[in-house]
Image (cartoon, rainbow, N blue to C red; front, top):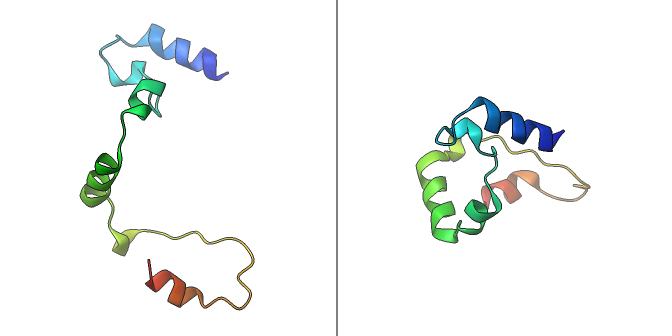
Length: 71
């Protein structure tokens, strides 16, 4: 179904439109991402005060508040 969705987007939207490209990027665009780009995105868009942390796993004997305060 992914292949069909990609083909449908190509058919419905011109090649210059964002919707004609894969939502998560192409192999080429993902390879061009470097640490500086990730940091720049984080600095521009991520706000810890409004973030939600999802924690799963065995947390027995772990001080979760302390662990989260470190990050």
